[in-house]
Image (cartoon, rainbow, N blue to C red; front, top):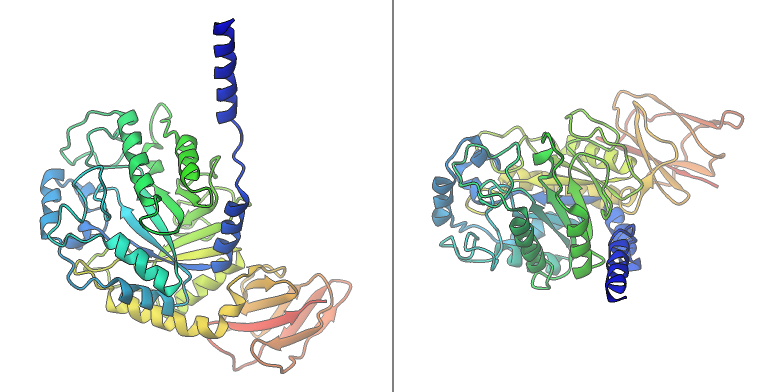
Length: 432
């Protein structure tokens, strides 16, 4: 009888762990808040910035022990968390995603798991993640933490398709590595860093070429994160459809439903969406990469993301001295001026019922439909609407625009003003 009871209890426990993920009410509220924010800033910063060759430098065949010595030279004397937060706030962004640990395994926060962290391994000796968390709180910015689940240095990480030439000792032990990750995530979510709103995971794709599928035990890791903080959102940059336990879906270098970069062929889910993109070409600081996108191009990207019901997470790679690049700060300033005037058409919006086309895209808040005309050469706009509009105006004015509406085809047509704002002329349509 005792053996039978034990077996039944074991089966019940197994069934409980296999239950589909059901987000808590607080988690659902956090999802809504996240979707309403629409614009965030990504920060890729680590000891790799010292080499000024981007965040993947260790993967280029550098010996990991020689690479690790750079930590002793990392002294970002110009780092000022409040200046970062103020510049980000001025851009109109509502949240920050900070790289706490990238693939090189260096922790940009104080951790008890290893001395290989910014407090113990560098002469700087300060927890920059903690300082940024405090600065974001002062500015009213929500904080998300990026965390790499792959590691190019640790011996217990089961090596995948990257980090093959770092000269590390290999003693793969995923139980050990998994316990390490759990301890670090526990530190990040334990309260020291305040109300962390999301965990942004990366590196799952490191095992996408394995002949035998690798079991990352993601659902177990997700359950652990949610046990620590049920409202904490989890996203995973795995380039596949969302896994059980995830709270938002991300797309790398492409808008949802597009795949120009070759990383985002997955279907678009019903979860909150986020697209991440660089300001220039690299994520981490690269001295030769000055090919910054223009402010107008970045604004159009924010608008197009919102038109697809998605957030834009726009990346900055700080310099090794801790300062944000001057060009990046200038872009933040220019975006901020536009968002201050037109952000009401972006924040809290959803994909508009008019869809998108060569002319631009649409966003919507209830009965207010915003037609974002992004094509400067367009002279006429023609879109399908669910009903006859109550009014059609240039956003921010009360001046009615001339238009015609075909009730049978439910088609709105209007000539576009020859003189209109760039890079986005916004026409507001009030629906019945």
